[in-house]
Image 1 (tube, one colour):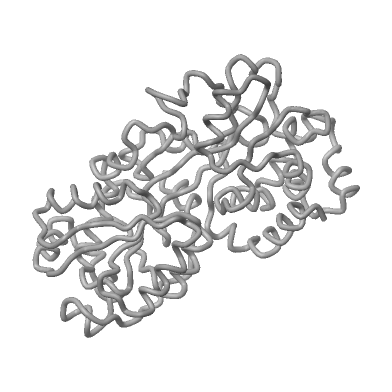
Image 2 (cartoon, rainbow, N blue to C red):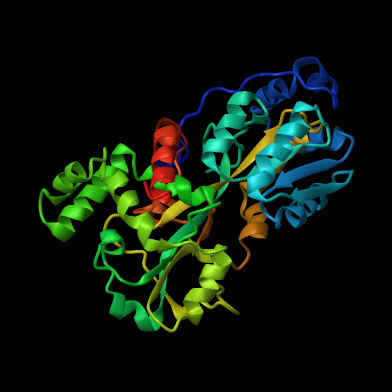
Amino acid sequence: MKKLLCVLLAAMMALTMLACSGGDDAAEAEGVAKVVEDGKALTIDELAAKAKEEKGDFHIYSTSSKTDKVVQAFAEKYGLEGEFSSTNVKEKDFYTTIEELVDAGNASTDYFVTQNAISVGQEIRAGRFINYVPVVEGAADSAAYAFMLYTKEFTVKNEFAGEIGVTNIWDLADDAFAYQILFKKEGEPVNELMLMELTTEGWSAKLAEAYDAKYGEGACAKAVAEAGVPTAGHLFIQKFIPKTTNNSSEGDTAKAIVASTTPTVGFGTVSKYKKEGEPSIDEVTRLNELAGFKGFIYQFYAQISKSTDRPYTAMLFSNYLATEEGVSGFIGKDLAIYSSTSTVTEDLAGVTDGYILENVQELKDVYAEALEFIEKVRAGK
């Protein structure tokens, strides 16, 4: 299990230890990174005791609107003083916003809850994000700690599932597939990350295997050569993107699939459908048994700000997020969202099997070339 989680999040470069103004004496003298490094040996009870000694407010910048209630519940649980709050920032504005705050030494910028492996890795290497792995049993041991996994899948309205007949991921990219595919391909970095992962060695091999299963042995190698692309992943991107229709949001995609009167395939976060209410998950078929890959699992990262004046509170909050109580405030009744803590999510290996997993190191290695290729395909070049 530990090996799976390490693959999930991969190794990143070591944290840059930079000094930070404000806060307790240790933070002022040696920097928050040093406080966090030394704090790795502390138990939850020890962290709680030190957090109660810290003064001032604790503020989070997050791409999830649920963070505000979660951090308030956390403060109440541990009896912490000060105002505990979160500002919700759209992903497209998130990193510009927090970079300005941290670089200015803003001591009211304490913690981050966000997504996008590439951007998180860049902030860790720049020293703005300080990584801390919770001591909670089963917490994902990673140099870019993420506490929550979100699942994206292809879906179709139940009544059209048989008609479209999709069993292989290449069915969706085939020239003969005439049905509409709703896929947010512009202004959606997470979907770009999924496509980038397809160009890695491992996923290109799985795509090649699925291609040969559909078209015959050796067919993928021939098609890749004829297309003049490096891998089966590049071939999929080249064939798939032009067949998709860009939708304004994945929430709108879910609503459109449920309301569809003709066969339409949608791709997006499964939690956009509801167990109770509209758009109902009961009205759609999840296409999560496709040859090639089942879908994409991306992560929500929990990182400490180098400018925080409450480093022990921040470490304690990371431990809270690693627990069932802490993550439940994000998951609620939503579908296909999981804690990355193995003692919270039963059979985590089974949950993630067959899905493309957001892998920091893999993405770092292919990012520049893959992004350029995706942009060319989107531009019709």
